[in-house]
Amino acid sequence: MPDTADKGFDLVLATDLDATLVGDTSSLQRLNAWLAARHPRVFLIYLTGRHTLAAWELIAKEHLLLPDVLVCDLGTIVRSAPDFHRERRWEERFLPEWPVGQIERACAAVPFVLRQRWRPPWRRSYYLLEHAALNRIEAALSGLPVKAVVSGANVDVIPQSGGKGPALHHIVAAWGLPPDRVLVCGDSGNDLDMLSLGYKSAVVGNASLERSALPPGIFIAAQGFAAGILEALSHFGWPVSKS
Image (cartoon, rainbow, N blue to C red; front, side):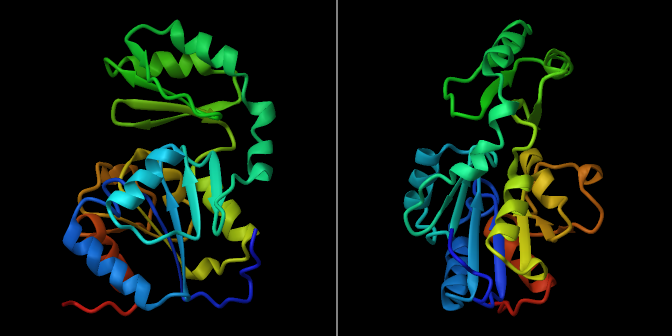
């Protein structure tokens, strides 16, 4: 873990990938250029529901900037530059919170729920064939030290202390990053916990979140994808050209 406390970052950008940073090539190129021009005064954190390989595939395909920290599998896997090895100390906290056999048996007994194929170390993912199955799966998991993260018809079961929000809070504290320079950007239900940490936060214009679900003080961009991030940067006082 690098010592960043004395680096004097002007911006710590913590952003979701799919449908937040990624989705519109033109505005993504503008944002990449803006961030690259301010390197190394920008600390870049990607937080995604993708597993690590899929995240790197997206980074390569969309020509994203290399992040300082990559958070995968809904905040359960943290990897940092330059080698991007897994931060085992972060994962150790999940050991008493992951009775995986009980989790799988509980969810398998719920009708109208399909288990998704990919099985990361600290996550089990399911697809709801009907909305009423959400209440049933939450009831089946009650009493277990886990939480269900809902995004549309997708439900991810992760350890109670996992999630994008706890991972981001850990990174800001452990890396000695300036909380007042953090900007969090997202678009969906699995971003809610990191949007609720009290940092400067924004949802992009194409967000699938209902406004009533958003914490107070969240900036709602008019524009979508990376253009919405640029709009949020300008709103919170970072100098962004309108061109």
